[in-house]
Image (cartoon, rainbow, N blue to C red; front, top):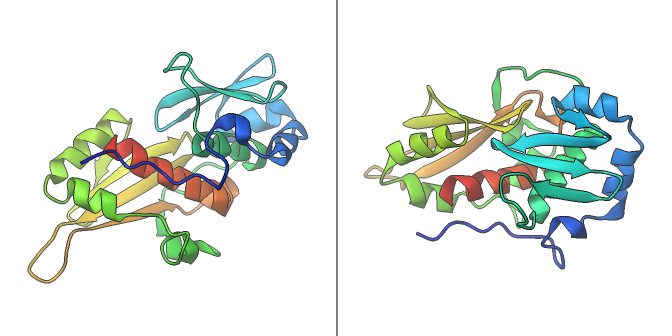
Amino acid sequence: MKPYKPQMPPGSRWAEELPGHLWENLGARGPESAAAATGAALEKGRFILPVFARPYLVDPQNRRVEDLSQGEARVDYNTALVLVTHLAQAVDTPPAGRMISFNELPGGRALVAGPHALPLDPLAEHFGGNPQALVERALELGGEEIDGADVAVRLPGLPRVPIYLMLWLADEEFPAQAVPGVDAQVMRHLDLDGLLSLSHLLVQRLTE
C-alpha cells in the first residue's frame, strides 16, 4: 500500500505558504513563554521542537521552518501549521495522562465526521492484517504500546501533546477500524485546525 498523503488547504502545500497571521501570532508572544509552554529548546530566538520524534527548527523572524533530520527537504504545510500554532497558543500545562475521543472535544466531531473528517480508512487497511506492524511503527516514532482495543499505541505528536490510536481487527460482522484519541488537555495546546493537521500527520507518519 502506498503511504497516505494528507490533503492540503487549497493553494497551500508547503511551510512557506502559511498565512501571515499565524506567524504574527507567534511573533507577538514572548519566546521564553512559548518555549516553556511547549518544551521547545530556544536558541537565539529560534525554537527546536520535535513532531513525532522528528526535530524541526522554527525561525519566527525569517518565517521559516526547517526539518533538522532531512537536510534541505521542504517542510509540508501541516507540520508547519502544527508547530507555529502550538508555539503561539500553548498554555504551560502538562498532559493530563487521560485519553479522550475527538467527539468529546468542543467542535471535535467535525474531525471524525463530515466533509473535513480525518481519513482513518488508510490506517485500518494498512494495519488491519498486521497489527504488530502498528506497534513496531509506533516504537520507531518514539511511541509505545498501551492497553486498549485489539491493539493500541500512544505517540508523542508533540512533547506535551500525546496522540493515541486504537485498532480493532476485522471480524465476521465488521471490518477493521482505527480510532484516534487525544490527551484531555489537548485544547490547551492546539486549536482544532492544529489538531486536524497533527492527526493527518499521524496517518502519514504511521503509513510512510
